[in-house]
Image (cartoon, rainbow, N blue to C red; front, side, top):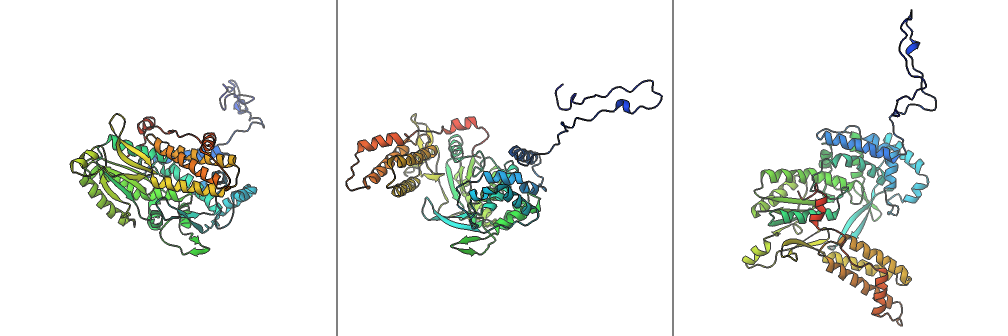
Amino acid sequence: MNGHGQSDRPVVSEKRPNNAALAVTEGVEKRGLAKGNPQERNTFRTQSRADVQRALERIRQSAKTKRKERFTALYHHICNPAFLRTAFFALKKDAAPGVDGMTWDVYQEKLEENILDLSGRLKRNGYRAKAVRRVFIPKAGGGERPLGVTALEDKIVQRATAAVLNAIYETDFLPFSYGFRPGRSQHLCSDALCLGVFKRQVNWVLDADIRGFFDAIDHKWMVRFLEHRIGDQRVLRLIQKWLKAGVLEAGKTVAQSEAGTPQGGSISPLLANIYLHYALDLWVQAWRKRRAQGDVIIVRWADDFIVGFQHRWDAERFKRELGERFSRFLLELHPEKTRLFEFGRYAAINRARRGLGKPETFDFLGFTHICGRNLKGQFMVLRKTMRKRLKLRLAGVKLGLRKRLHHPVPTVGKWLGQVVGGYFQYHGIPMNMRALEGFRHRVVRLWSQSIRRRSHMHRCGWDRMTRLANKYLPMPKVVHPYPSQRFGVIPKAGAG
């Protein structure tokens, strides 16, 4: 009765008159709709975020039903002002500016004008990618990691492109790939590894790392991998512009190369996952079906991955053939960070029988994984906060306290509360309470030393510091469930 197009005209059609001498056309004609109620067209409003989501959903459904077909019409989505506007608001407002010096707030002042101008340049092929400003940040294991700071408009276009490509590749990526994917956190990846070691017959572990992966990605292979699903040449040319944009380091432009993608761009994590999807993931899936004689599990976070084996000969063959596979795509396993060792349910018993010490441990996603037992004496993978990560975080707290040496105590207390609370949100996993308590205790000691440095006459006893700590710093608590509980709710994810 009240549905769309039901009884919405002022006059409905009638039956043709029976006794008319001539054909009466007007007898069955309908009147048009009123001027105020025009028929709605099946189009999207440009400024609606729901339109963007519906368009992405159509791409996602098409990618799911047509897994071997190539998409030849994607560029118009990237040029759409609604996609660009949504990508702009998804950026961090306080992010560092690129080589153009443009900030988020300045760009927003004339947002509609800037978005329409960017959309027009994309449509008429007038968009040019700018060089990436390179900075170096300290690594947890020592040394420095190069980080690329992209220009603001490049960030907008990259994020819009990544949204479109994610709708396609999220249907193709395998379940054991976790890095930089929507809905897949580091804790989910770590829990999948622990549950895989616990439930499957894992006796040997390969802790693998790719040497300089982001700098070793070959552009030709990258384009060939993209062409498996992307047939729109305009999208491929757009990605190649970013790959060949060059890097600005110390005020000088570094020459363009045929390999590498700068870390820090919105598109770089997706390109890295696509590269490893074809170079590693699909090969591993086929290898363990055809070559392995026992159980094999794998989890991957970006270029770091852990592989578990039931038999040692499977592990040694896999490591050897993996090196050969990577050499084909101009990749190389890091000789120092890649190692094969005994780990699993029976590792401690087997090593004790051979007169060896405790099983080796390995670091993954900020935690040290240990062969241990729970209170009932059952085997489980214990996870403790990495010592290097702990020292690096405490060094950052010490530096922050020095910068706030003369700030009011309540201001410093609120800042420390945020730091400690954020630390607990990540490291608050089961069986890691001692590390959480130790971190909070050391932060309180650093804060006490900072207060005492305000003046040589200043006295700050431990009773006062305890009151300040209880007032501003949260207490340690476990915020994440056990792996079996988490995967009881999420059955589709897990170790491959």
